[in-house]
Image (cartoon, rainbow, N blue to C red; front, side, top):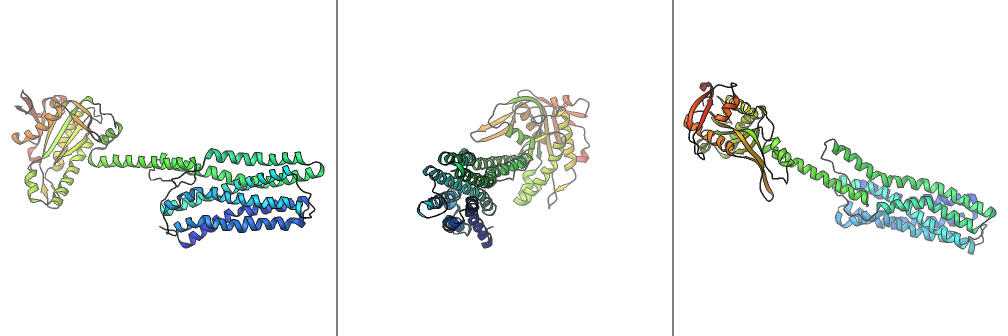
Length: 495
């Protein structure tokens, strides 16, 4: 959403007022000087010089400095074309004020030399030091006032245009050093110059003027200096608290042109990385089990495997090829998704995880990567629950009945990340996995819905009743293996 004309005018007006705020401070210092020195007759010259230079000229210079930013806010130019101006706005504004302050105070302090006034001329040392100290002070005051305004402007641009500063010319260390020197050493240098130059009543008067002016100027400067230094850190600290609480949609406006702004940029990049990681984890969770996704992320860059006892379960839909011939693509996917949702729930409820989907079937594991102490019994119970869930029901708008075949085997399983380059996947390998897949296919020969291996039957003990189906030859094995099926009510699972 772009800024309105009223908002743009308000931003411009606020900048100009902040830029010429130095005139208000200058006026207060001038009045204080005139009151303490009794030089009211010369006040019109000093105030006039400030009005011409620090008010009128400064307004004109500041208007020119803000013009490119105004063009951007009005949509007439790109952010890239004004980013450098934004970054340098405090420095350029302060530099303009510094030059104007130099001429203003050069004129004011030199008037006793060429105009008949009640004020005696200043010493050369006091004249030079006063001009330098006041010029630097005015520069510093304006710099931090505009830095405070820059935070407001950058926040507005970020909220309305989504743009953040990416150029950083300022130095946090240098800013802090200049602020401390100007506030603490500046007034002392001016007083030392007067101690060296004057004595008696004149010395008392000059020091009194310096102390009164410094007290007023330092108080105002300290306020804006603290805001300029602490505001970006406070914003960043608040954002960190939000991220720590789990909120990853945080993005912070860069409001300073120094290391604090650079740290804020890196913070935004870090949160974006966390968001991307969370998005990947959630995406994985849609296609594989959440625990598998967590394992992949936890072992990123580590392809070493591990071996553990586990139970593997394979499922497949009987006659799915025939079913696919008379269903359209969208209907087929809808039926399959509804079916898989039905099958997934018993597996997860019994402590298993789905490693991957294989066409119309799936490959699930118990005790790897997610611990499942009684994994053989859990897998058999999941298989029975699956059969109960799909029995005598239909799927999709066309009411398709689906019969499920399940193969289960227990034994040592190897788990690890495999792949090449940037394409990696967490998978399970080994003879146990292969056997479970073969048993699922063998259901067709035995007319069964669930087949388990000898190892699974032994691990279940007396928990389930099994019927032995003899021994069968399994592709990939030289010896025959014994197979079993749980004793079930076949009528319950008819399809």
